Figure 1 (cartoon, rainbow, N blue to C red):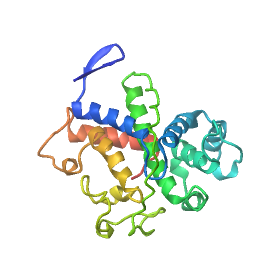
Figure 2 (figure 1 turned 90 degrees about the horizontal axis):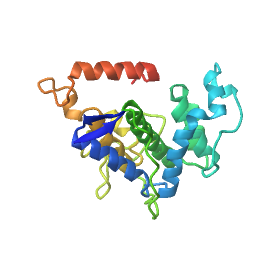
Figure 3 (figure 1 turned 120 degrees about the vertical axis):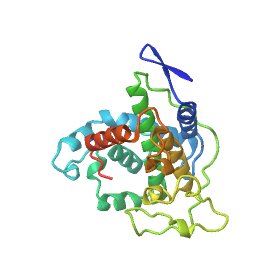
Length: 245
């Protein structure tokens, strides 16, 4: 399979191309706590955040919590949602537990906030891929009608993180098991309060990076570049982004 990028025809793994397209289509479908139109509006805010004047002034400040104002927004989403999206996109490295609690305990609610985390990461990943390939940003998809399921895992508790998560041994019979495909490490618990988003994010993540079982298996090289090259790129990108995971 090939893609046309920056005037060149470049090979791309079919699974990667298919998952990027599927992840983009999935943005427009009803989620667990947001409907399709709202999810597309969240994606639009993710793209708007880097040019937001308030976000710029906060980013330049010694502390973002000393700068007040209103975000640049089209007004579709509630202010709490816009604040969450813009902070996650532009200044995630300085988010505090207190700020998370102020958002989670607001009318927005913790479940909607967690779904925003996943959507923001997915949009950022795909847009970054397209920019790196010299491609224009793809048009936002048309929303798919329908209502969110609004199902919260019964065994989810707030223990290891600033948000409530679901432990692998707390998945109740009949509930979606978010750990069945991609693994049970703490990183897989990140958005487990909204189990479907674990699949939505990691289905894309494993194609952009590596499947969990491949990360430490140095007897195989499943990508066109090797483990050492992948990790060098990952470490450099993490340093630039201020990600210390």
